[in-house]
Length: 141
Image 1: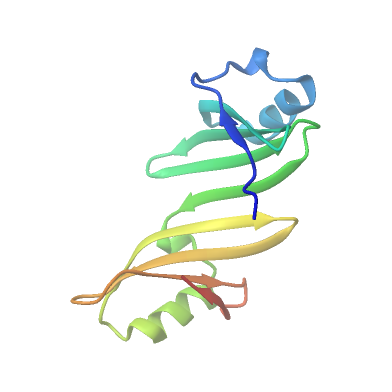
Image 2 (image 1 turned 180 degrees about the vertical axis):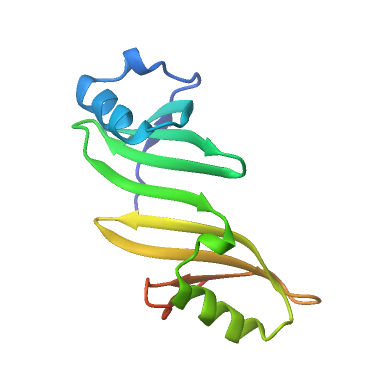
């Protein structure tokens, strides 16, 4: 089995160094945030742009954009209290007071929304659970 060839640029790119469709997608998603970095990787001769935006204290957004400007993936680091109520209720039921949410992320891929929750429980390994927006568990990592 052949693995895809991946090459990465060593330096961060400036917004003006990106193809126009990519720059427009970044600007459309920047809002009031601060652009932290833009990196470019090539996978099987296709460019992919990785972007990180600081959106506030303890918050950031990561974007994956193809060379045509299509937004492929959005990963937003959010506070646990910003999780939808059904997800918060599912997590609370699972924890039953024996652990805490270490990290929460809202992930959008192809317009499908998921919530990734990293749970830290005493004397157990950390577990990442993936919830749909209704609080159902979609996956455990």
